[in-house]
Each structure stands twice: as C-alpha cells, then as structure tokens.
Length: 329
Ligand SMILES: O=C(O)CCC(=O)C(=O)O
Ligand SMILES: [Fe+2]
Image (cartoon, rainbow, N blue to C red; front, side, top):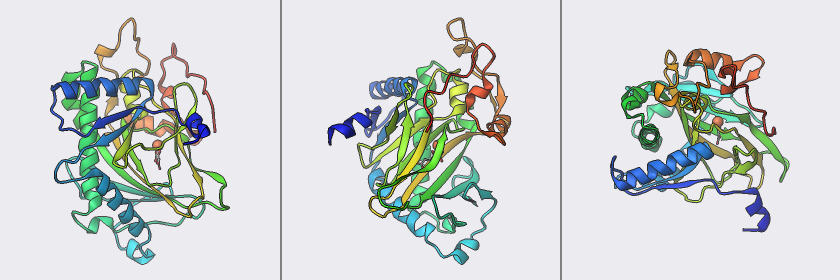
C-alpha cells in the first residue's frame, strides 16, 4: 500500500463476530462494548461474520454477487413476468415471500449509473437460493447488533419492542461502469440512511465513501472477504437521542477494470406508524431531549421533500440547531 493510499483511508473500526455468540458471555460483552464505541465515534463498523457450519459468509457473498449479475442481466420480458410492483428510484420493488413475519414484502432493485434501464427481476420465483440465505444471515446479524446496542445503553427492557417495531428492505444495486477510463463520477449522492440500521456489502469494484464525524471522507475498503459494513441510520440516531453518530455516505464510480459495481444492503426500517421517541432513560440533564418525537412515516415524508433529501436535523428541538455541514461533495 502506498503512502497516499494510507492517507486517504483512515482505519474504520473492525469488529470480529466470527466466534460463537452467546448473550451474556464475556465475548458477547466485549463485542457489545466495541459496537457502542464504534457507533458513538464513527456511526459504523466493519464486521466479519463467522461460519456457522451451514453457511460460510465469504462464499455466500461471492455466490450472491454472481446471482445479482445474472438477475440484472435477465432479458426484459422475463423480468416483466415477475409480478413486480411500483417503481423504486431507478429500479423496482419486487414482492418477497421471505420470512413473512419479518418482512413487509419488499425487495428493491436499483440500477444506477449512466445507462438507466428499467430493471425488473424474477428473483423470488426461485426458492432457497443464495440470496435468500444471505437475507437470513444479515437479518439475524441485524438483530444481534441491535440487541447489543440496546444492552450497551442499559435499555434491555426495550429490546423486544424494538426488534418487533421494524421491517426489512433488502436492496440490490447495480451501478454501470463509467466512461471514460479513469474518470470518477458520482454513483449515489451524499445522504444519510433513513433506516434504524443498514448492513451493506459491495463487490470488488468498491466506491462506497463515508464521512467521519470530523468531516473527512474515507473510502470503505473491506479488510476481510467475509465482512459487511454496519451503518447507523437517522431513525436510530433519533431514537437514541443522538448518542450514536449517523454518518453521511456516497458512492463514487471510476472505470478501472471495465466492471460494473454491484452492492446489496439490508435496511432495517421502523414500521410506518412507529413513533420514534427517545426512551426516558436516555434523557436527562446531561442529555436533554434533542429530537421531536415523530411517526416514522411523517419523518420519511418530510425527509424526501420536494426541496431535496433531508436528514434527522429536521427533527431537532429548537435548542439543538442543525450542525454546520462539514463538507459537501
Ligand atoms: O451501493 C452502496 O454501497 C450504498 C447504497 C446506499 O447507501 C443506499 O442505498 O442508501
Ligand atoms: Fe445509504
């Protein structure tokens, strides 16, 4: 690694979840402390997941990316037969029969980049494929991390309510390689996620960039082939009264190997009627209430207004004016 590269890539926290997890064990407690520390300072961490005898996350991740390529390459008429619902950004939402008790029935396929095509995918006709397995792995991991976060703030009594207040969107993205060679282009604008939490994974093309709480942009380069990036979204930032950082991120594209960028993300979304309100335990003299309580759907409506995408600062109570944005693209 050259010295320039070192300069542009400060280390993001890395947490190793690869050993067997048992709530209450010393290993669990040490991970919980690392999770809270990473989220307070960075709002994200890289996580390496273990092999649970049935699933090897590194192999599964490789298989998922090859399935995504096949899916995005399906002929249009095949995709059109797949019972796809409403347009979503540059792609479509498809019905998802997976884990019905946990999902609101949406998987999203977004195609981004210069050549935007309608993209409709017949994925869910194939049961038990590797994408379903991946959804199981990341959604279970999401629940583990959220349990750890709540425990670390002494909010154990809210765990069940919190875990059942959410639904998932599993989104697959393809970004076309840009032209000409070597030129950089914005693939996805600077934003914060509106979710409680997001778990992301990108293929070897890379391009995800994160803004630290000091305002510097860091390229995300996974240190392990079986790792994922966990990010805090606006909803958890508000629910925890601002005690964890919610970071801005973007995707930049640069044609180097003539390869498209694929990524997928599990977005943990509060149910739309859910009122996002910090628990009493997190409000006090040292930590006055920072955000007005809001039903998630109202927040979502305000955040995606005609005047552009907003972040949680629109919910600030008057004593907490929005911070000055450190840097823009
Ligand atoms: O494609 C990625 O890696 C990031 C996608 C993302 O940030 C989003 O959809 O909110
Ligand atoms: Fe995002």
